[in-house]
Image 1 (spheres, helix red, strand yellow):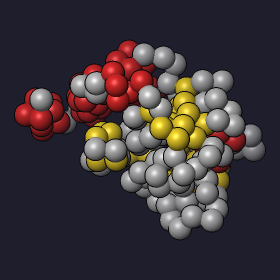
Image 2 (cartoon, rainbow, N blue to C red):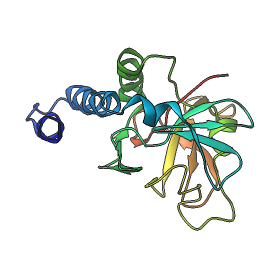
Image 3 (cartoon, helix red, strand yellow):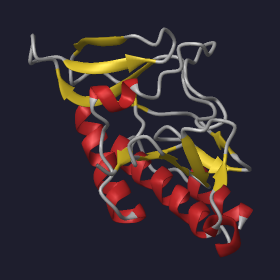
Image 4 (cartoon, rainbow, N blue to C red):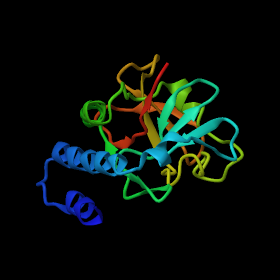
Length: 183
């Protein structure tokens, strides 16, 4: 199994970013499918009373939202997120969401500004997020799916270095991505 995962992740796939996204998500799907039912059937409570963790998913008990514990581009293995988080434009993010919905099932999407802000842990050191629930999160901006209501050409982001939100990024810029489903 390890050799196949290595092959999927390191197979030359050309310069096309969408092919690269597809290959990474395919490897993620393969890894998730390899988890035995006894591992995934029993959610574990974390030190944070706001979440229940079940493998690569964190369920927010306050809202019912299901979060991917890893950023897009990372792989969940050995109870952590490994690999490099991808930075994507809004168009590339839409393609990654289509792939995630097809391969993982469900209605994965970008979070709203309010949803992503709910992950900020002000008392945490950077990255300002619960590092047990969301390991290896980048200490930088993450996309939301929400346009700035003042300047509609810009999209809101949440910066996990500072914990602040910014409505200044253009859709063609590349930021990190964390997907959510539910609500």
